[in-house]
Length: 549
Image (cartoon, rainbow, N blue to C red):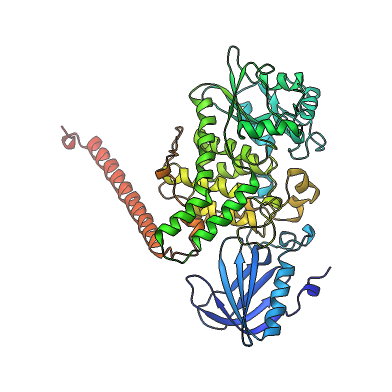
């Protein structure tokens, strides 16, 4: 199929663009296969280049022969296009709808994008499993890297290489995989250097109503325990939901078969509930009634902050079991591709200072989300404005980023990156010129040959000027475990995402620039002090009479 077939009117003159916090612009609207472009001959006006993939929904309005298209984006931006002529407006709207809902993966923009920047470091090779395992090997000899899934036949959502206990052979892994949802047998997620405890993740066990057991699965997770130690299984479902799963062939680990493990149930909502919550939250943020009580009531009714609290609480529990109780942890829900990954990745941010650096956070997203099989393409195909009935869409990754922002806000000096990095990841997860978030698993990305045919987002992020832009000027390396508060008064609405198109950030930006200036000036003064001290010390060694008493 050619893009030209979908573009009924490729160009319209005299279109007026209205967007938040920017002056109104009149210019020429052009539709290409992947972009909606509005350019103007006016001086000092910024062109609009909007990916069709970023468009969540459009609305059409008509007043006489003047048509208006309201474009609602997946990054929560809303822009307005005033188009002269009803026919032109209908044609443009029809074209945008067709181009923004293309099902064919091969027609997506990352396959056509050619970078305008020099690729210094190929992001596809930046965070390989082999390199991560070398770090693990330097700390312990109790684990090995298994290629049991090299052809994705054991588990379609796992990567080809996984870290497992050294004493467990591949045949045991295959049998354990047959006992876990989607073949997701327990694998290493994190090794805590301080005490040697580990965090593993998996899918639910397929015990069913008959209480089926699997000796190989029991052997696999018991191999992670030290002599005389117990472990914790954190199930991200309520007891009721876990019990219901038995009727569908799923279930949970019984105490009789896993006597060395204590099971804890936590209530993190399923994906369909989360999508409704996001829609209600964005509706609340778009409420122009100017009634504070009504706004707060709608915000509370969305339950978004409740979800943030539940996820952070469960992550803190996992981290507490590992760091304070000295126990290993297995985390799973049903599939093990959503709430499980939220918990394991947030627990690592709490425990591991390396995850709070720009490179470390990229490695975390790569390892715990992309390689671990979070279905990005399904979850992020719609955002909060789409008129289509949700299928598999859910803001699972956005909720994770929101939780990270809450911790960053509480520990502003412990993160090398600013919230700009988190916002950038949110935007690219939903619509991007890069291939990083395409597909639903490592298997799908391999079949699409993304590493050869597209550019990695990490290639862009790791350029020196971009690292500088995303850096936190307050950062001071903190090697300690950080414990975030989950009290209601400690958790705020993430204005940087949900209100950035509603409330001007000019004052905050000015304050931020002033803070950067003060920090830079402070560093310059500190350098001067250090230089003067060195000069004084040198003078004292040259002339004993100058020595201070």
